[in-house]
Image 1 (cartoon, rainbow, N blue to C red):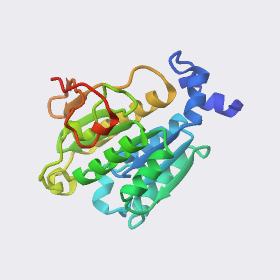
Image 2 (image 1 turned 180 degrees about the horizontal axis):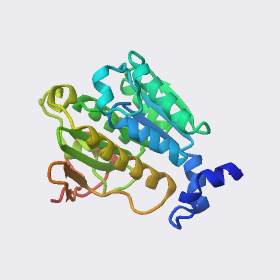
Image 3 (image 1 turned 90 degrees about the vertical axis):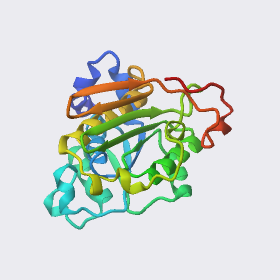
Image 4 (image 1 turned 60 degrees about the vertical axis):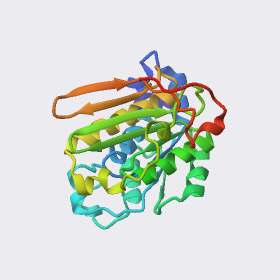
Length: 257
């Protein structure tokens, strides 16, 4: 780090859990952000601000006026632009020292695995089951931790899945694939209160910073947030030994409640 870096990140460096060593790890780290909407916006901005060295942002959608109510990485002049490009520009404007690349297409299974293998952490900022299962499969295949967030109406969820940890479940352990339609979880159909996605996205960014810097203990289990009451609930989770997505990891153990 040069003098400017020491000044920019001084408030993090003074934390004993981070210090210079942790900040240097952040500067050398790589994050894959899938989805540049309500969750991906605060994730991208806070990871860039915190000094994560390289961000890859993937999203095939374009910015629409209904997005501006909550997707704070985009502005009115970005209407019609690809979201990954718009979010990348916002991250770079915040921290020019952060290397940001945009993937302006939907990543298939092979593309997700390739992108995951080039990252140190994956952040699932999507809002559909099909995308979440594909991202989870890439996390398991690449052996890269996954920070998952969800927000709908007034309810949010946060979970960290780490295939390097023998006690950690994967997303499919928590939500086994079934016939439930994707539309059931889409903000476009169900609505979402604006600050909720910021709250969950900020928690995703915090967990990613912890994983990358080595500070603290990664989030365990599943946390749900009720925005109407302001209450969090926490659930312990274990790996499902029958899970088709992660049983090839050869781990033992079961689920707990």
